[in-house]
Image (cartoon, rainbow over all chains, first blue to last red):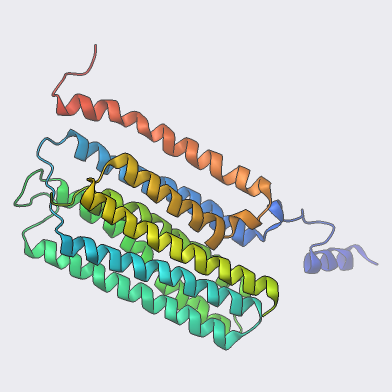
Length: 210
Length: 98
């Protein structure tokens, strides 16, 4: 076998020249895990900044009435349910059920859209009450900046996740993507859900009207 | 679907129920006992643990992956807590220490 043939053969199969996959998972999945932990640190930093400003403000407003709290619970229910539906999509993809995986991915994306709409309704309600980035009718002017920053960053992740699920779900159905791609974006979607588990108590419940 | 897959989905349904139950408990606790930061964080951490281990299947991965991901992330998040002293300084309008 010539040197050229040997090289092409090795490039095709990777065996012998490539290192084995670290942690016995595909590199793309490892990259998603690394993204998730770096994003966790980003959210951690944003929530710490919120805590810093809230703690150092003498007149931090407690604004959320029970309607907002129940709305947050409904949003939690939707997001956690989509974590379950995306697991159905992964299961279907692993069984090579392309139609099933597509259906569950789209249901998950629809849940994400519903979540974002409920969130926008919450934003509009606060904006209607006079909350802006650097002013509000109740107290510390930075309340709006922190609320919109934290929830806005989370909502950007939800919207990004919905777009990714639409692309990967339809691409998997068309045969452009493999089951591992559904699995990788499901990981991301669970992470979006996980961040919300901290946003609700820290942003909504700690700022509940008493 | 084989028995293992059925069992796995059953576990996922249980975890789903537990996470939602904790979300309700969080709200009930906040409304009745007051939203203490400690209580809220502990409940959120339990939810996050369940989501990472079961929904994200980290418990099924090699222990070396868990070791590579979790301690480093916790270390960074804990180190961020050094800001609190300054936020207390600010609310009492104390000058920077000389």
